[in-house]
Image (tube, rainbow, N blue to C red; front, side, top):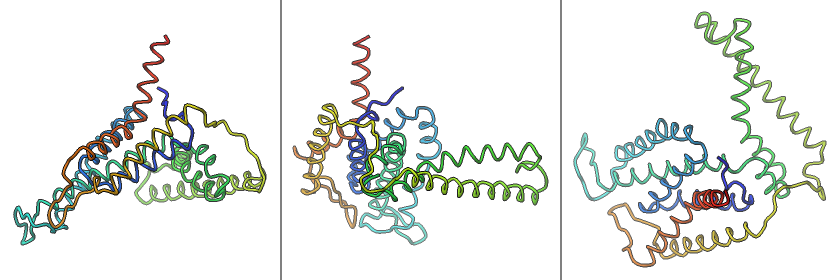
Length: 292
């Protein structure tokens, strides 16, 4: 299923993901963390389907639990002591902070997975190709390196298997030697590919002053409307941060701002902002079914 949010202008995609990732990293308020994790989990499942669900259940949730459990073992700050573990106090504040850290870790990972699915290399090159041509080219190559590396190493392994030099045959020493051979071939291919890409872009005049390039991206009326909505929500979140509505103090005791009308407005704005891509997809699906 096609993602509607991916069809918007790269400026909108990049602004959105920068905002949600930064907010997820710095807003430790439990309400905002839960909103961020829930929205990121839903959007990643929408983008990657079963692959995202498998990754979230097998790797992400256990990692989040481990992060939440590790913090109380090493962080003994807080005034509410629950018990002692080998003469080390186990405090309520450290447990809650560990849970918040685990949620923050999970939300950032999920948002980055959504970023990788939406912000393709051509979008990144379009945004930063003229501003920082060399850095944007390197960053684009890095983003493409992992999937290309996986495909190429599978091809090399299959080729080596045909001549009886795969890592699954022979003694342990022979398997290690075969693995080193595959890794050596892989590194040679990666270096040659990087040099060829750099020479190809240089021959095309990439980064030269006054060079023009074709682009399929146009900032139309639809993009303007969504961008103005995003700016309005970002303004509400910034105002909430300035007035302390997005923060919480965990140490030495838990202190949280009293919930009032303005804080509810901030929570609502953050919720709508986080589910914006999902809402756009739902609206597009409803529109498509209505047209049919």
